[in-house]
Image 1 (cartoon, rainbow, N blue to C red):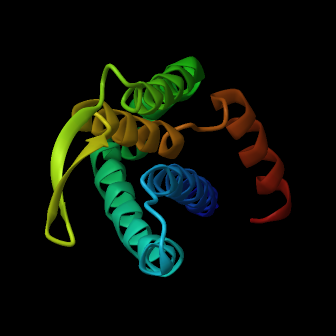
Image 2 (image 1 turned 180 degrees about the vertical axis):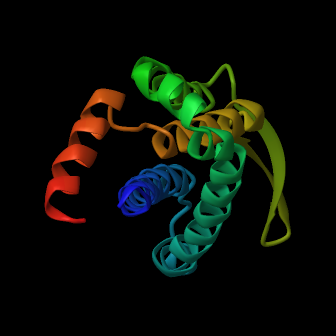
Length: 161
C-alpha cells in the first residue's frame, strides 16, 4: 500500500514537472521565434518534440539525483517537513530563468542565416541551465507535508488491506 502511494506521488510529480518544463521550454522557443513558414513549422512541430525529449532526460537526471530523498525514510521525512526548501528552490529556479533573459545577462553570438552573419542575442546559458535543473528538481521533489502523507496512508490503509 505504501508503495502504491509512493508511485502515485512520483507519477503526479513527474506529470507536473513535465508540464512545467514544457511550458518553460516553449516560452523560450517563442522568445526566439524569427518568423516565416519554416520557423512556424519548427516552432509548432519540431520544437515540442525536442522539448519533450529534453524534458524527459532532465526529469530522469533529477529523479536519479533525488533518489536519496525517495529511498531513505529518514531523509524523506526531513525533506517533507521542510516544504519551504522545495518551494524556495522552485522560486529561485524560476527567478534564474527570468534573469537569464534580461538584457544585461544575454550573450551575443553570430548566427549564419542564408549566408549572412547576423548577431543574435541568447539567454545566459549558465543562469538558464541552473534555473532549468533547479526548477525541475524542486517540482519533482515537492512532497505533500509529512503529516498529511501519514494521515492519507492511515485513511487508505483502512479501506485497502
